Length: 404
View 1 (cartoon, rainbow, N blue to C red):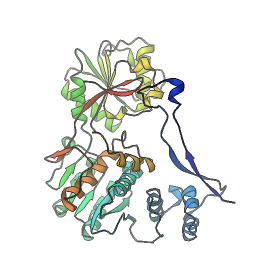
View 2 (view 1 turned 180 degrees about the vertical axis):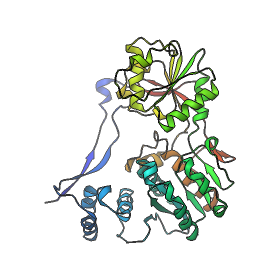
View 3 (view 1 turned 120 degrees about the vertical axis):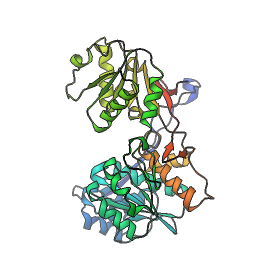
């Protein structure tokens, strides 16, 4: 009896003849593929290797657990999800090779620093490679946190890499910008150049343009402006940027885990103001609903790309979204890229890290490795920053609609 089940979730739209023609996209999620483990006992590293040697790929996929696997097995798992069912090969450094490779791109992943985004970064690289069918080798360097990046950079340098994708925070920039590594082209998808303390000609930043988003949202307001942060690193940074652009803005930090925020929200600074919510999606939904419940008369609720998520529609009521505006920075996405990313559990349309990561892979290949290759992306580069075009969206009953 098979111990694993390959399950497919298929969704179909209702027949148009029953409900009439409509130009509205279905709210049902597209088909997804996942693997269900039916074994009562966990499968450790030795068990996973045995499954691979026996060719039991779907048992391996269903029984794989990140915390029980080593780096090589983790990469093989992602490799299989990308559709590459080759033989299992042990190597000292995990890597994904889409075709015979002539050029190497190092991908530096500080797992404890970027946490869950580690998987998003690696899966985005794999999805791009599968879609582009390029001849570049993406080799992953997995390490704990940015305090260890010095030894990783020395390893990258020693192995002769000319290109690197580094999803890091500004804490690691000083080392990346060191003169010793000026021969390596670094692409940083997690930071915008405006926030970088260290810049070099060999470093390109692809992070979301939050400053541009706040500027565009501010232009949609008149009168009072207020801004709420959840106390996180990103939320605090966004609050500061709101204050720079709007010196008279009323700033607030709501770190409390209390569900009832009446005391915080009924302050005079929010009354009649357009309010930036620099908070997690869950807290954004909580605050926007309590504006309504406690009759806090705000003109507009303003959000940067951190709130651009379809889950917003299940977490909020239509009345909570009636005066909400959301800024995004990404262009239309190639359907092939979108589909490949979806197979690996990455929603390229909404993920604010996956899109810049894929852009970086695309930029390195089309500008340095294979200049005859066609780019999947529309954005240009100016100086040390990818130039994103900011759009303002409004969540409606049928989805996110562009505001002219």
